[in-house]
Image: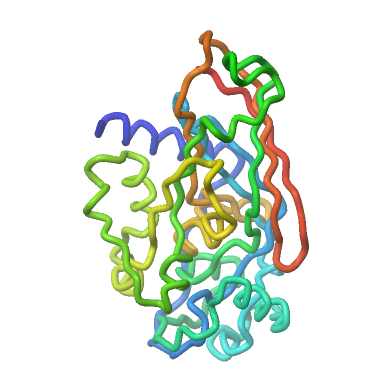
Length: 286
């Protein structure tokens, strides 16, 4: 199982590096803590989401975000990062209200002297696209119950990393990662997104919950605030940030005949405050 885990990590790294280039991370100087009303510090508007076959029946969800000018910050954050892109408080407030993230009232680590393009590494920054539904079809017959063009959601498991359960609990419910790390390789990969020596991330690691359920049973909230904050922004290229969304789609059954299927996935949701859809296609070899 460990060999499979590390192999999957390596494959995902290659996927990201294919369309982007890694840059040195210089998120600025941590200078202290400030009490905030919102757990989320800022968010990035998103201009594409696509899927890649990570290994076997596992699909990784990858996104691309706009450049730093599309970061929307809480106004108060500009006191500490005055060079940050212009905020839009109305949109930011609507984004936080949609996630019930308005009464955090806890201390958060803040930085100064960070370049705008590097602010995405702050662990409180998330992508701005909330998935509301996912539709998956194949161009070929999958099995007797799933002919070509039939939704495959009932034979796919969704696994993701989210802080929504923590927020919905009134910022008190934490997740016990020890209960799943030894039995679920994907959980260990997701956990690595929040496993650093950073003081803030060590203190808040248990706020991230593992979302694991059949895709056709997922609710809108299961898809909200996916990923590990700024840790999901792994690469930058041509003024855009690329990274893992902190979520995977896993086929729970295989096609009747081993073959390559052309899979089409449609993500419907809200990007900031605007309804939007992204469609991705990829060849999956079973």
